[in-house]
Length: 260
Image (cartoon, rainbow, N blue to C red; front, side, top):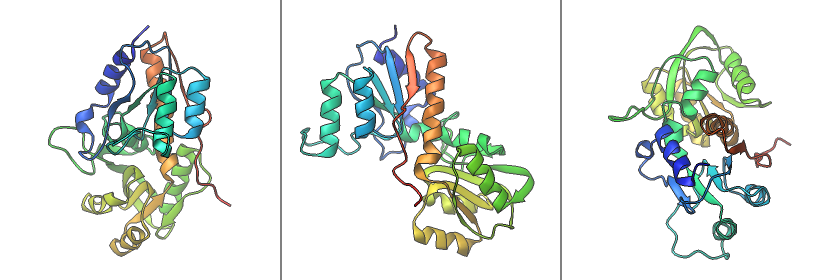
């Protein structure tokens, strides 16, 4: 039976913390590495629902994509939402690990998997790093398709019903950038890389206007959708690596945004 520290070492090999963004808070954020990791749950975010599930299912380690805590803590009390969640987890001896932007950028991380899922070839980073795989991804679709067809491909891969699109649906798309989550800030990099479209989770209104001005299509598939599939696949990776532990992606986690 592996310890939590052993699971952490594997996660750090899979998505090295040193490729995370400087502002990020990644690694083992709560817990005791010496404890056994019999039951591991992945999720996108630590919420009331995922904490309930972790405690009720006697989870030893939660691998949450989004860090909690994210900002440095001055105190840990139940007066704040984050403090209350962490207090409950600590009381149940549930550890928390977050790979966040390291998993976004890893060689087999979320952006690489998103690019592969959309059938991109000759894939490169949108923002290269001197030492590391770089952030975001861009690649080629051959033969070229329309923006509308690309939107359909995004919906199919992410198993969602709707996306937001900036740009004329019949326009031709041959080079595509991808950036999971809040990836609107990758627009300029996508333009520099010669992309006809950027696929991301969410972007500011004025980023959409800038995309129109630059003549780049923009497909917004939702922050949740562009990252949740990654933590589901991460559960599969952990299950294959550690056959003697029980691993699953949270069954209660849901997208807080719904179409009405």
